[in-house]
Length: 486
Image (cartoon, rainbow, N blue to C red; front, side, top):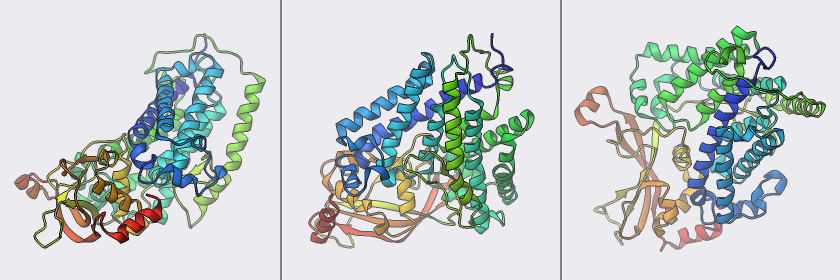
């Protein structure tokens, strides 16, 4: 029987593949529930328009063969089914060919959505999942020995995620250097959760200590991923603890969960067997062909790592960027700058035909982002509400940088059910509104005394107008919609 000494990463692969399968499953369920309203035939940024102005090699995707809602739904369901095969272990229970095929298809299908998803698939965890998924293709099935080179390449991926995040902070916002970033982060992060309010109220000394801990975990600890066993174990455990605090304090989609999964290669079977009493029954010999494939992949990753390394050492470091259309080796980073004030776009509608100072506006509520001041921030991670995240970005600049907001307004004016499905509630159940506008508000967490007295989590003040009142009867608005192909 094989042992942890003869096959040191069998359990490592066992845990890693199943956890990555869970992340894939979440990603495909998010896609299945949201893609029609976002990038579908009648979505906010339709795939058909995107493919009309790009080339295949700039965005390789299965959807060049067809991009109807029906075809994309079938492909998304295929991703869900294949993810379940990975989660249950069916993917690696029938030999090498089946394992490679399933993991390759998972990567190919998700790549296809990311490459046509435009702004709604532009988050760092999309390319992180693709890079991790690509390497997993070569880990092999349960009856084979896991290639140690691939395990080390997964550690290299984890290193770039953590160290890149640390470098971007040192080079970015001054609050990372004067240790004050946590004075603002919990309140101004994209999607706070209920505990964010409590984290925000921690003493200043704790906030400063947490910044120091962040620097330590992101800049020092990653070097331990390649250390001897005890050092590697310790580095993995510290990274896991760090990401658990991020999970507790906010909703960062599946970023933290995927990074936790990437920590698994820091542990070998000698460590994991203390908690998981499993071992391989029989291991096939490591064939020459497989050795050649693993060597080729290793060389490919090393060559493609040159640009990410140059980016990390550059004073003009960028974060969450791909250097190839297949997203094989990328550069990462998070929260290089911290916003000091939270601005929120509030969409409102009215049925009044003519607008006056007495017009009554009704507010649209989103599923995850702050709206009503009395609503408790929800727990949604690792699920990803893509529109809510983009609304956070849009609030930082003029709507002309986010033209899809105009299409969203038009769809609400038409009572579009797919667009309304992206929201928590529709205040216009009987008929669509005649006018839509967007107001910009400054949000702050309430103080403990205010929360106790009012029960409200937030307080807000109007800052400015974001979108003027829009109507489908407005010729200029109609012209913009026609020009954009909406």
